Length: 117
View 1: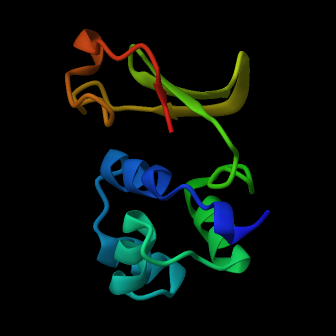
View 2: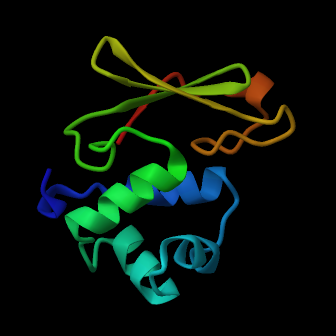
């Protein structure tokens, strides 16, 4: 795993999905709010230790932020993340009233079949 390949949009997606501020992630990881913001914009790459901490915080596989291609599907009240045709063992359950973090519509009306990050 190399931080050189960090996919910054994935951190932004998780932060919006969980409705967290940069400050809240910073507080949970011991990093600065500015560092989190720079990770999201791609202006700064996190260290491998930092990436592992972020994966642990969100209960994701260690290579979540560096895998080449993940597909994010909104299915009912879940977001399913998969790699190619193989689903990963990650199901992020949404509250029924939360909008889709990808297209921002109600989960029952989500029209985004899949988005590649």
